[in-house]
Length: 200
Image (tube, rainbow, N blue to C red; front, top):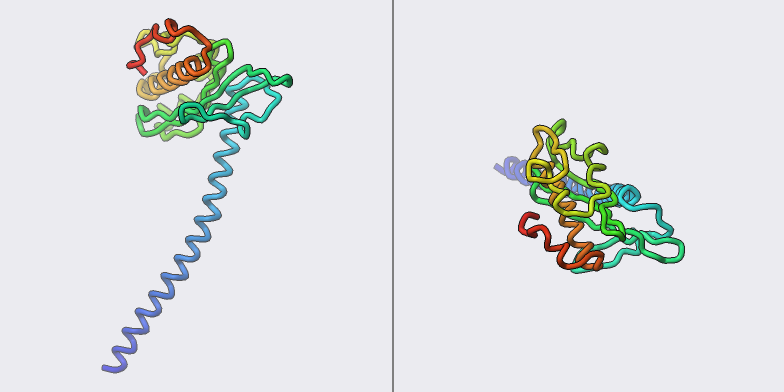
């Protein structure tokens, strides 16, 4: 009986020690991995800024401003003139979950560029929204109506078999355009209201 109890306690102590050691190791790995993930996201975000903004002389990532609880990244010339804005839009309307967009809008009120920071869309279908030939269709558009996919009366060719992903992208870009135009007064209120904001 004594040997049994001793064996039982030994097993409990052994399992506890092993659990503690594994816990410490996992915590260490998690801390290292977390830092790496954050850094990878930052690098990807900066890459996105380079793609959606024209050539700039400042550091938009570090010099962002906050407008209506959103971070806005301004592209400026050497003489400190703002030539474009970038804003992050997170859409819940993708087919498989959240899609994080970075959208650039020029000071003339036109789409400068679109970059997808993160997504979980289906490979070979919805994931095609990351392709340059799709995203560049938005460039130069100033009218929110045109930002819709053709199925909804706009000018954007939706990706075959990926209507949800295509529509989510169009709505995200339109949301960014409305936000920048409204907050930085790039257009008149009448133009902003030319499209029902309920369509966003």
